[in-house]
Length: 182
Length: 283
Image (cartoon, rainbow over the protein chains, first blue to last red):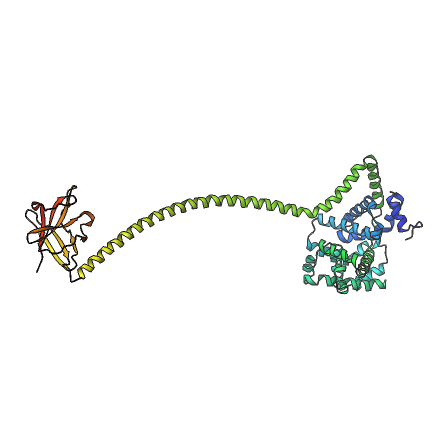
């Protein structure tokens, strides 16, 4: 990604475990957009999301010793930390269910405000947004970014509780089809 | 397990999207460990989600990295001074995560304790109430028993009375019995007593009727007189028996019946000056 210096994942992990700030800087440069994207989707407030992003990286820094390469890729591990940290913040702010939906739809539609910071392929993103129908997008986002339960999703989308899982499967199958085109 | 069916149920997607409950998540993780096909499906979904996450990537504000690195340096310094504390804090953070789900359990115990306390108080209160009621009931039972005893006595008294009355009625109905009305004799006036005698069976009864109550040491005695010769027919009582027919000694024959006042237990010969009533046998 435009940086002259590149590390393999193994090198990066080793560097982080040995508390190398240089490796940490590299980590930030490469992964902060993805993790900030998560924080922003969850929190929907750029200032709060910035604070959350710092928390996320501090957590990564503090717990990198416990990261086990056998358990999965570094990115998967960091994404989970980001998501949990952001959702915990969201919950501690005592957001209401109604707000979640409102934020989500406004967030889904109004990403233009962050367009300046957009790091990835803007065309690909637009394609995703266009091709996933609203319900499919919302079901993924409610679960993944808002940490909603099946029960909450059933109520928000007004669908039977028993069909939430199959709707989720259909949404991700559709997502996969779209991602293949990118 | 039907792996294909499991995969198509949507539980893997739901798990990766963080939708399922903790217990369901453990179940899915176990299935991933056990079935390579399920693991492959889960990995694919994870990749989808990561790519989806990437599509939402946004470059964070410019100054953020500097801020972060500054905080990192601070932390590092603190760690150098007291690494143990930092380590402990981390552990605490981790522990908090694990303790979190236990809080409702703790709360449940608190609720249970409160509920138990309330129940105890209610139960104690009820004990007092019911003990009071038990006392009252005990008293009632004792009273009822008393009443029962009294009623039984009354009942047996009535039964006796009834038997007596029945006997009297039988005598009345029996045509073999002769009824001899004895009138006051000499200085006595307004005294009546009646004899009921069956000459065939020799049974004799007396109905004292209006004979006055005798003194403590005296008793009335009945005599059957045949040809001027009195034959003892036994003594009888008054008091509560005054209105009842009392069975006397057998009387073989009699022309006249007479009652005299004698010493207690009766005399061999009548004190004629103490004759109260007498009546002639008809026919």
